View 1 (cartoon, rainbow, N blue to C red):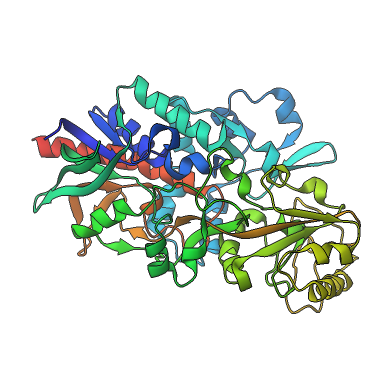
View 2: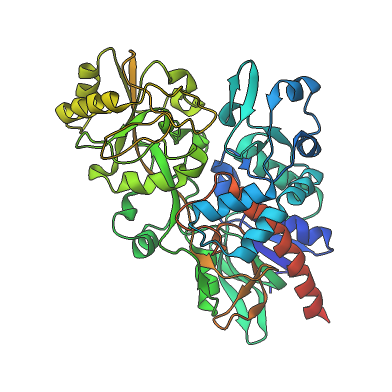
Length: 497
């Protein structure tokens, strides 16, 4: 055996480090196994913008999470509230009420305290002014229940957690892929690790799996998500191959959750196969509620204004993948281009501009230009002009008489210059995974905890179905990571008795 640890954590992102820090503060000697080299470490957490959905009752709560909020910021900002009831409503609504109620309750009720705990570990939070607030009458107003992000985005979050782990004596092995669990009838006793070209056993009294979903595994995507999913771009880490899920299933863990579902978004059509940390989440294109999307046949195919972006973006990638050629074009005019998120202004975009609609539609690669022009004209004629446009609320400014309605934020596209952006499907993470208890213990086929085995993060099944509320993934990883770390220490202490 190569070393003796109380707890081994498989994975190197937000959930993994929250588990490691939680285990360490409860007295454990902890080892973190990260499959990636250090410059690609952090799993999908490194590719996020760092947004974390958290329940709060007002600016007083937010001040506890963000003590450096200035009085001027408080005076010039309407932070509103995002109560636990609102969080529960969102979790229920977007998952079509399939979310596991016990897991959802843990997620929601522990969200605030878990972020406070993260702050005590050195993670700094700031308001998401750039992406979740618009200025109305001289005052910033937040919308969509998403207010808080980690300073420095996903990379800043991973860096803060990694630094915190280092200061607390937590050992991290990079380029060390866990390949199987050491297991017998009494439970899990460690991990076999591929490191430096050799497979070595690492003994421990408990193991936490926090190594993400299977979104980087094209074979598994096709097997579980269905035909065509091998063609999706991967937004995040190339290392999320489903290894943690596989290892647990091999020793009798119970699969659980929405195995045919995933978080998938509109993503730069010509982005690389896997995420690029230099660009991060800049390939996403999430301002579609303020424009329209056309497919290769020149037709609209989805209600771009069905809800706030936070509640539709994670499912619209799938809809784009289902279109001919697996792509679409997002189209905007000059009335709304000032509202476009920063990701539309990066260098790595497939973009066309024009001063007439005829010129624009002719420039849309792989699109029936004649049909596209007719579709835009029909859309323009259907927009209700009697309802004012308001980007901060579901304004009810809709279309009438179209086969595919636009429910909110419907503006005519008639003010040049026009801009169009090519998008495809980018998969973020998969929803299927392992069944866990409220203590984050991995359950076997009979629903009994496997002694010494715990899980957190994207591979926890049962939270998300069909869709998810934006910013919930990192919060879930932190909440269940903290629980898993503490539970693993209890198991380790029991094993030592």
